[in-house]
Image (tube, rainbow over all chains, first blue to last red; front, side):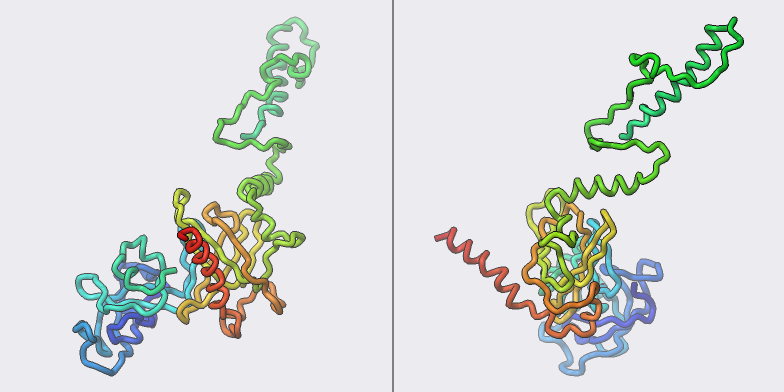
Length: 128
Length: 212
């Protein structure tokens, strides 16, 4: 249940560390796992200019699209199971809707499978 | 599903009896109209037998005590469904008088199917931190720390998609029913790498034996 002003951890290698939600793209108030949101990067890593793969590095203050991959609010699965993570995390996306970074660092929710984010699932080290 | 017809038959036959007596015995105006059970008088009367037969897909309980006011109906449905879905012994996981009962702090391995027709099972290993007893909707919450992020899964005990629940290690020293304090003070509760290796090791040994 992430909304305007929610701060999320960014768990890819795009360079951003924290991102603040400024818009929920499907138009509602709350965003859940698997929803796209617009974020402002509120904290970024200050090392190399570009990442090793040549992907553009994000700086503090950049406005990007992001995909929520973990949420503290418990998510209902179709068989009645609930999953809850200890933090809210997202992955930055480019304008085409593809992941901006090349690696995902950390657990990712299996909800993405239903929403067809196969590329992210293959990048993730662990899917729960 | 419910054989109300048995009771209704008595009343219906009483109603028909009233009208039949007034129609047939028009001269006897002295006869009082009251409920006379035709079913009792005439056992072969159609209203005497329960006329409703449940379709094959519906399971009618063997010993069903009819209660026309509907009291205790949800409790009865709960019990019947628990008997049906708990046939594989998962009822014992929540049964305190059974040795297999789960206790908060146990390290569990929960295998879940993705769908009713799937063969592959997803495995989740973690510490049981909460058991909620709600009849058919009983659930338990399992917590683990995966890649430094705490993950909690709440499973419905009687879900047919749960393939198996096994206890890898009994919890010791947990003196609460709900171990929510482990979210802030985990201590050593989530050091499960050794157990996870033990879990995977026999499988790999078995496959090696099969191959050789």
